[in-house]
Image 1 (cartoon, one colour):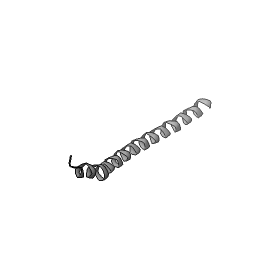
Image 2 (tube, rainbow, N blue to C red):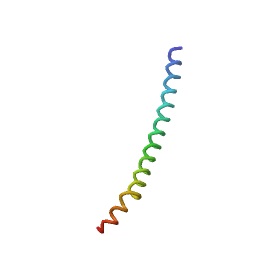
Image 3 (cartoon, one colour):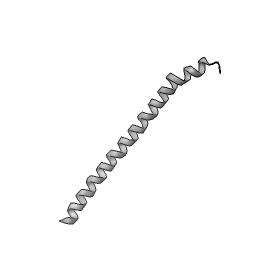
Image 4 (spheres, rainbow, N blue to C red):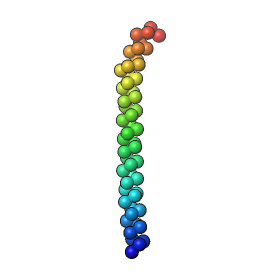
Length: 52
């Protein structure tokens, strides 16, 4: 009985870990997209207007 309970608990933890890993990957991707957008919208025009 205890082994079965531990196995179920371990499986739930594995599921939570997979969900967290997916969330981290999505968050990282979103952050990269936002960094790129900020660079293109804010920094590139400044660089281009400075005559460099």
